[in-house]
Every structure is written in C-alpha cells, then in structure tokens.
Length: 429
Image 1 (cartoon, rainbow, N blue to C red):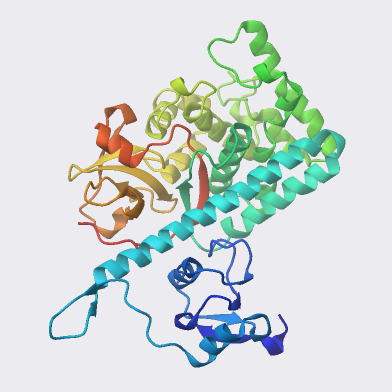
Image 2: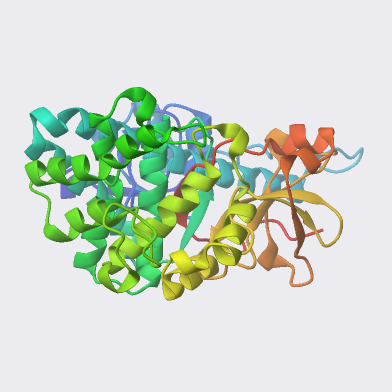
C-alpha cells in the first residue's frame, strides 16, 4: 500500500469489503495476513475486540459502498442485546455486550495461537523431510521457525503459556514444539543471551531428529521395551548429532542434541555426564523433554497430569536436573501448569488454560458453570480476585461426569505462547 493511499478509519466504521492493513505484530491479532479485505461480520467483531481505535485502509482496493461507509459513517450499529420497555427506547444490555466482546477476544487469541502452532508444525514436518536430502534447506527452515518465536518471546511484553487443542499437531511435531516453546520461555527467565536463545531453540526443535533413522516401532520407548530395543532407541542421539552436522548446525545446537538425555547425577546417556559437563541450554532441554514425556508418553494410559509431572520432578527426580533450572521451571509453570484440572477455594471446578510466566500463582482458568454453555464460557483470570485461588489439583477421573464433559481435559498436553494480558477477563463472581 503506497503512502499516499494510506487512510485511517475508526473501527466503528469498519464494514465488509473494506481493504485494511493492521499495524500490529503477529502475536497481536489472529488473522493470517496483516493486509486483507474484510469478508464477514465475524472478522469485524474480532477487529473491534483487539483494542485498537483506528486501522489503516486502502480506498483503491475497497468496494465503493465500504469506502463510502468508512468516509461518511453509518447509523449507530444495533445493540448486541436490548431490554424492551413499553414507554422508552430499547437500551443496550451492557453486561451481555461486555461478555460477547470478551468472548470474541478470547476466541481470537486462541485462534491466533492455534494458527501459529499449526504453521510451525507444518514447517517442522517439512524440515524433517528435507533433513537428509536437503540439509542446508532444513537448517534454514529451523532457523526461520526459531527466529519467528524469538521476535515475540524476547520482546518486553510478558508471555503466557497457553494450552491448545490436542489436535493441533501430530505426535512428533507436538513433542518438538512443546519442548521448544517451553525451553525458550525458560531460557528467557534464565537470562540467556539472544545468541544462546537461538541455539537453544534450534537444538530443542531438532533434539529428536535422530529418531528418523530408527524403525517406526522404536521411535517411542515404553516399559514394554526390551533391553535390546532400549539400546537401539538410545542410538537416536548419535544419529541426531550426525544429521545435525550434515545440516551445518552450530556446536552449541549440536551439544543440545548430544546431551538432551544426559542427567545431572550422571545417570543419563549416552556418556553419563554430570551437571558440570552439560551446557546450560542442554540442562534446560533435558528437563523440559522429561516433563513433556511424562505428560505425553507413548502409551496415553501412563500419562500424568501436569501437576503430577511437576510434583514428580521436584520430589523424586530433582537430583537428576540442575537445581537452579528446576527452580526456575517450577516458578514459570506454576504449581498448577496449563492443562491441570483443579478445584477452586470456593468449591468450583476448573481447568487451567493459561499461565503468565511472571505471575504463575494466578493463572487463567475455565470454570465449570452449568448455567453457561461451554462454548460461551469465558476464561477467569484469578488475578482479578485476590481472595480466589486454587485449592487442589484433581485427576480427570476424579471429576463429576458433567464437569468432565464440560471442561474436556486434554489427553495430550499441547503448549504454545501468547501475549500475557493483565486482568481483562470478567471479574470473579
């Protein structure tokens, strides 16, 4: 759009067939492109929920009627809901209007996360296919994915860890993205430099790439694996390092691949290294990889809830991980990580959906309310009510059937990140 064509329009004057340009980062809106022609009222509702007062539009690319509306305005839009009166004009139902605006914002944020996760998952599948035949292209693809993540994670804005649909990606890309996203957020809190963050991200994204050289049946290890099968499985580390070398990865990224199964007490593999021999990025990926494998094992029957996994790491496995990194991880994820089924201190059931990594003790939760359709339920930010908190964590099997159907706890945990928003949700009631 040329500078001479850039005109601003109030969001109240948006209409279908107006061509607009959003001056927002990719984390701040749910659309595939920053420039597009509005096609539906749903898009307009989403745009109005973003909190901006004006957007740029292109008169030359807009339909005449839409341009006329942008330039001269419309009569006031009909209210979202009205309360009739016999002797007075109808009035806007303000609480319902606010509810719908917040719901549109909530859906827009979730759609944005799922779209970005889906794009990254596609990129991972592509680079895995390219790794042997086009190793340079695979390296560039991995670097592009991590650069995109770092553009927002390293900004001054706070980030929140968001729970997504378990259908967001296939098993391999889901694990790689979970480990990458959580490792990068942990790396930021640990104070890693931008260079180290890039190497951490590439190493995390490719930590299991050596599994490509294993038979399908050996790519996931479980309790039924024989000693010979476990030995073959462990060779994926060496395969990954060799493939990483062909891709031209840096020594720091290769070290993450080589050490992602080493443990601080020397009980890991393949070299049984102790903590002082492990790089900081390797210590981060080792911990996050173990957490995700506890939540998302090869056999779903063995899956732990996020709260159970975090408790196991801290109580029974803390000697296996760097103490400082483990402490930062627990602080970041909160006592009740996203995906945890919980009971609030007022007796209500809920599911943790998002944790602000800077204020983890007050997450956002989806609360069971039989009076509200689950499609219309809003996230409740526990920061909005200092007296409201989480009483305890529950396994999905402990939830009453109606609550289980309503909250739909995930069988597989799928994480991404989003911009943290300060207490915009409806107040606790």
